[in-house]
Amino acid sequence: MKMIHYEHIVEQVAEMCKKSNYNLGEDVYSAFKLALQTEQSEIGKEVITQLIENADIAKTEQVPMCQDTGTAVFIVEVGQDCHIVGGSLVQAINEGVKKGYGEGYLRNSIIYNPLNRKNTGDNTPAIVHLELVEGDSITIHMTAKGGGAENMSELKMLKPSDGIEGVKKYILSIVKEAGPNACPPLVVGVGIGGNFERCAYLAKKSLFRPLGIRHEDPVVAELEKELMTEINRLGIGPQGMGGSTTALDVKVEVESCHIAALPVAVNLNCHASRHQTISLN
Amino acid sequence: MQKKINLPLQEADLIALKAGDRVLLSGVVYTARDAAHKRMIEQEKEGIPFPIDLSNQVIYYVGPTPAKPGKVIGSAGPTTSGRMDLYTPRLLEVGLKGMIGKGYRSEEVKKAMIKHKAVYFGAVGGAAALIARSIKSSEIVAYEDLGTEAIRKLTIEDFPVFVINDVHGGDIYKEGVALYKS
Image (cartoon, rainbow over all chains, first blue to last red; front, side):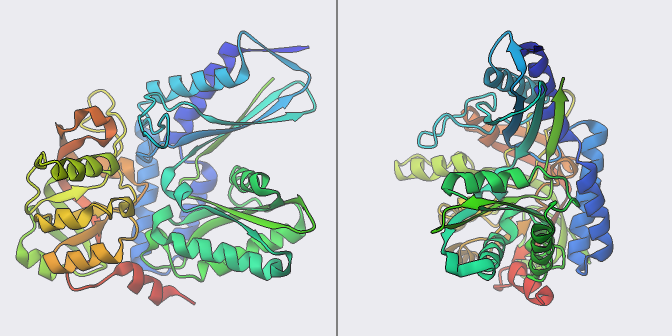
């Protein structure tokens, strides 16, 4: 049986926290460069120019690209044939977050309790979703999810009679309502189906897929493309000051659901879309 | 077209600024976000005066990352301004003349801005490493216990912003979107 040590997980997670906040993903950087060519508004172009320059500074100086270094969210695929030694997996992840955020001069944005609002001081606890998979390795997907875009996210239980048109209308309404608040140009993550809590998870999970990669199901891929076009017709533009680049990408995940249900969740992500993936073998 | 403005804002600056203008700000601004706003307003109700004189000042809604050794400040981009809307009309009443943040303001805040002649600037959300370069000094002046949410006095130089809401009722979020909607 494969042994994966607690300390190894701590080190890897700490690195992921730093890297995701310092180094803008190549996928997002390419999307910025493309948007600079296609954006129609002069203000919009200036915003994208600043974002490209910002990403360059953050990478060169190894400093956070955004002051909101986020909630550390993890989706961990745990191979059922591996064995973690030296401590628990969730504990190792939290220890890694504490180390990464501390050593990396990242901001601690997590509070103990939403009602009394006292800061925990080390950005833990992280949000950890575990998925048990075949095999003996562990794959860790991490995102540093900013508060501004998360605050504008929403879920609704639509009626089956609302159909695909109702789903699209709802998604567009959320992006429109978010306007400048969610830091456009956005990455729009959508979950359709599952149940109440599963739907929100699907929307979050969709955001881990790199920009420019369409869903493998051609029907869902087509929906992503249609939504992308319609969202960019809203005119919101970079930072909401008007323009043709409102979304850098749209991601949709679809799952089975109850005959009475049509759950739709929209999880907005800011332009930084910080995500990292590593495999521990 | 890009304007350069030295703070504090003069009456003539406030009248001349129009929604959509690109501006480079230099001078002093104070940082305050959710927790500092809440405390200022709650303490004032108990008879404790604001810890800083806000008359003719500019507040920047930001909670910076910790400064790396040798740096003046960490990354320092704007946070969503709407969360401060509940507290803002009172601050405008005592003479606050400018706010830097990102995102929509409430109708009440926009009306108070016109009434008290104050401008709302937007900095680029997420451009925090770039923005930090225009911050030349940072000093905590109140509420140190709030950590990243403490009130800081910043000296800025050519700090890049856009005018979102001007004193004439102009709103680039409305005007800009109307231009590009198709």
